[in-house]
Length: 534
Figure 1: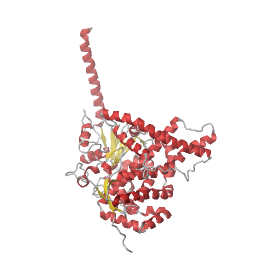
Figure 2: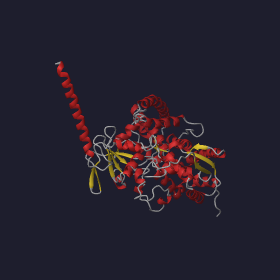
Figure 3: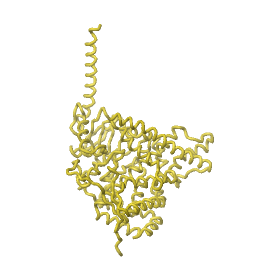
Figure 4: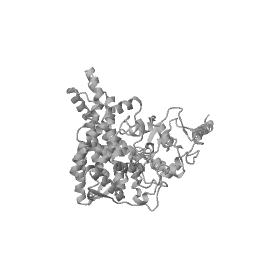
């Protein structure tokens, strides 16, 4: 019997090897005739993606890799990445018409898997089905444009605090992290809209903000293959989550008790805060069944998770986009001049007249067409990320007369950056040209920075109004200059040469959105700008 062990062991090893070889072959052959970069039966596309990632700084956002692969191999419309067994395989869509066909699809599970260990599952941006509908319905009214207009006083109050800070720093010619200052502003604005309570990040500092920023970093660190990094994440995340969750839970319970004791049912048409509408169904339930006054653990977890999601989401969209905008304005004085002149024309030439006009006529923000174009062009060049969709079993998509598979757990990536750098849609895509958006030059489906359809960014109206208000109350008073730039001698990417001007700052970090690298350091001085007479 003992003499038979080696042959049996060899036979077992051989059978296992044959099994896994067949598994690899059966998987890889699915991609044999699909468009994509050169494919290996052993490695799939893993080696190519690793090689591309090696061209860029550490922790570069994946959208940069996808844009580089598509541009380098001239991949158009739809193409595939075989990344098995390390992660989901991907169908990359770069054609705007194909993107429109996916707008009603569910978010891919991979999106929730990345966020749930640190934030919680079923954030409104990742949820699907009835959970998403309920969350969306409770958040949408306070974020509708009609309601956002009523918040102009709040936007002014908080932005004036930023303006005072910038004045103090400008007098000494300080170098600042623009990202740091804008993060505090945005956090205070969004916090007041969620809770209708001040959070004081700009004045006293906020442990909330510090903890949420650490959560963002841990989301990225959790994807590392380094066991020491994973251990660090495990040790830190539970303490931070407990601290943040306990504080938000206390605010929720405090508000629920106040509404119930005062017998107040939050109005959907004129909501007091986002939190009030999120509590509305529970108030109705407690009125019908007085013995059911509180939340179940599952309900409270979902509420807390989505409050964190709103606070984090606003940081990504608004702060990052403003940082890129100021960077481009700092290097395009002729565009900055046009922005300033637009503000003079619409709001008057001094701060007192500007504030009075804005308070009396919030709709005038919508007249800032050139300023809006300035923001949109920066967001085109530096989108905050891509969307991940999941098709139903058996679904296909047709491109140029051929049907392509998009099911079997493929992560359907809507790759906005490549679309935005495609000269077919944006001639000379490296050039910062706000004029593209004036008139009817750019079809709506070509600009995707807020995504489109029912799953587009729920806070886009608020984000645009915040950004326009910040520009209005700062660009005429301060001059910003990019600090510490280290231009590259040769471009790292094949699709842009911007790093020969700005250096690696233009290759955004993943955290988890595509954020400016290095905090967007700026030298700030008081501006010598004076309005023209007449």
